[in-house]
Image 1 (cartoon, rainbow, N blue to C red):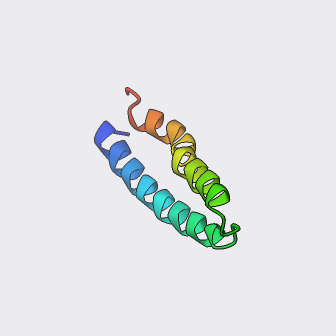
Image 2 (image 1 turned 90 degrees about the horizontal axis):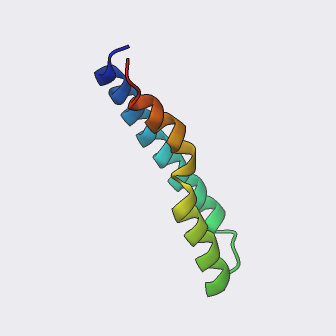
Length: 65
């Protein structure tokens, strides 16, 4: 598979993942207690952890032939 095609597939997968992730985080965030500490912890972790599942995909996208 050419690097260009891998990057196109990866870009589409990343966009689909992020759209799903944002929808899930927002939906779950509605059920978090309305206290600043809980919401800060939840949204802080959600804002950091979104990249972890993407590491394998990004490494696959940038792999040499």
